[in-house]
Length: 83
Image 1 (cartoon, rainbow, N blue to C red):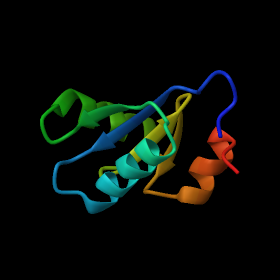
Image 2: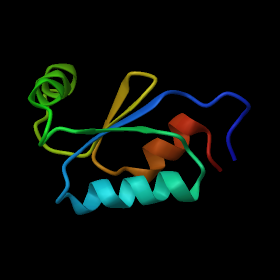
Image 3: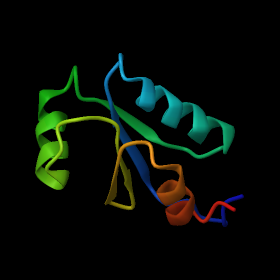
Image 4: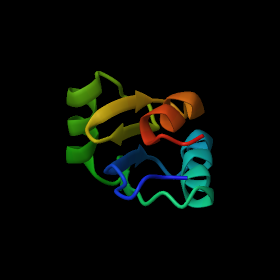
């Protein structure tokens, strides 16, 4: 599982994104707290996500402000130290 202090996790999503839903389900299964930002509803957040990553597609996951584009379980596990 996770070490004593969990990194800050933010996931940029849209309601119709199946990979976003998979990522959120994975976080819940692993008891990882996250903040969800719906870029379909929040244009400023969409612009912020694009500025940070150059991406317009979702999901974009920030772990301690380091971006992961897409639902990349290996990168997520590595950055969160999940075995």
